[in-house]
Figure 1 (cartoon, rainbow, N blue to C red):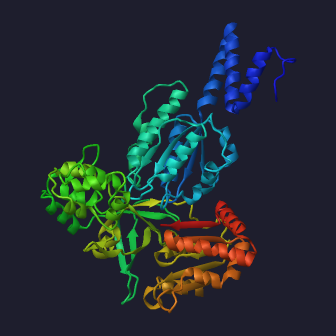
Figure 2 (tube, rainbow, N blue to C red):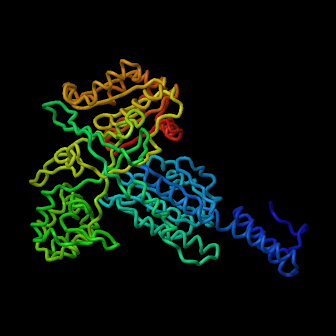
Figure 3 (cartoon, rainbow, N blue to C red):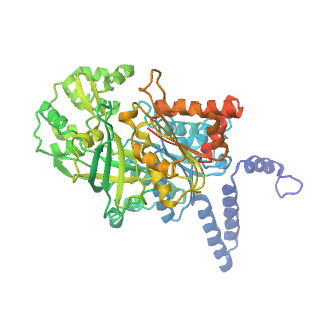
Amino acid sequence: MTLQVMNSPFNEQQVALLNQLLPALTETQQIWLGGYLSARQIEKTPSESSSTAVLEAQEIVEKVITKEVTILFGSQTGNAQALAGKLTKNLQAKNFNVTLTSMNDFKVNTLKKIDNLLLIVSTHGEGDPPDTALPFYEFLLGKRAPRLENLQYSVLALGDSSYEYFCHTGKEFDERLLELGAKQLSPRVDCDLDFDEPAEEWFATVLVALNHLQGSHSAVDQQAVTGEDASAEAEYSRTNPFKAEILENLNLNGRGSNKETRHIELSLEGSNLQFEPGDSLGVYPQNDPELVDALIAELSWNGDDPVAVNKQGTFRPLREALLSTVEITVLTKPLLQKLAELTANPALKELVVAGKERELKDYMYGRDLLDVVRDFAPWQVPACEFIAILRKIPARLYSIASSQKANPDEVHLTVGTLRYEAHDRQRLGVCSGELALRAQPGDHLSVYVQSNQNFRLPANPNTPIIMIGPGTGIAPFRAFLEEREEIGAEGKTWLFFGDQHYTTDFLYQTEWQRFAKEGILTQIDVAFSRDTADKVYVQHRMLEKSQELFEWLEEGAVLYVCGDEKHMAADVHDTLETILQDEGGLNAKEAADYLAEMQQQKRYQRDVY
């Protein structure tokens, strides 16, 4: 609606100004302006009733302009979602009206109506957004994104500094919002794998900024921001893991296999930990004692010397800290830049300078901290200074391979042992090596449950499901079928599994056979790549059954993919597009849109790594 001079108390110049201003105001800003003008008018004619009206108008203003906050999260493994949920509860406790939404479910046409936006997003793979962030990502970085001059925002970016494109998705969101005219509510914070402390600092900064908007300059109680208290610490979590006893540790592969896959059974008795099929278990590993001792010897340290292991000033013996607190097997650019300041060898400084990115990446691949210490001696640095620049050893996430309904007080894992030779040394995966060589029944592992709402069985047990999981990607589907057996689900189930050899690598073979015999598993197709002259993988089996697979999709089946992201998951995705084109008569764009719509409907879910 355009204001006219004829029917208003304003002159021509005022009308022109108002017509320029009003269309640019959000609904929230218009309400605030109305409340402000009402309060101002009442103040000019004071009375008992007008004083009450002033207070009411001020309450409306405060409520409208500062209490509305939208939090969007994009999460692959669940960390961003968990942080978003935590922030929501804390802001609600401060009387903020919070809207919490996955980027996958967010209606992008409402973005222009938002005043305060908080984004929490991870980066997946080589700088890619998580699956659940794709629709919002494509909209915001596309041509249809609107100007957002009235938006105030802040970004919490999660990533892994061992990857080249560290926190790339969060950085892209931040830069794009600035381009669209939005203003930072508080600066973006980039978090490494050990994200707890920087996330808490970001929470506090955001709360200060929001309080400032409503005219409050009160000090922020850090405990109130993070929601931490004594009762919370009693619950086992990522920051307070449970010591789970190992009940069973078996090698699933047969004699002569090129692989070693461990089936681990852990006791959760007394933990009160709850999980659903599709969730992961975080396991905090210990570093290889031989690697730790070699590092101490190389640097001429004393393993009994105390060193600080956190900002709170907790001390541990050096050897214990190297075993269980800090990471020593993964190199990152930030770490090497810090190490370059601690050695008298100029070669490391030369390696980390701008322009040497390719040489640096090549050096880091397949090497660990012991390699750096040996390659860039001499080192004359106290252990306490060296330890201070190392990041904490991160938990390893493994898809849970059991149903809690079928195995109360237990959790099962399927873990492939990583062994390889690089730079004239034999190497082991940190956690998989511990499980293969040192962990025995009766020992304990520090664990926690990582919820994954993006990998869930359909709510309707009659919905058909298609599961694609070669190698250790089979793990969650064992949990799926155990769960469906326990609840008496009648929906059809189809499993695609692959590995190298039928005789040695058919993981959980007898269990699939039992599920099939009892009607819990409707159909199974397997691919063993090394048993034939031409390598056959799961995507080839999918193509062989393309018509039937398309019919299942048309019936509303939910499709799940678990396992290697870089090769297998990409090949499976391409194969699905081919099947949709061949069997559904779709062109390339229509096939891509079909899969995107399935993802939006949570009918195409991936747990890839």
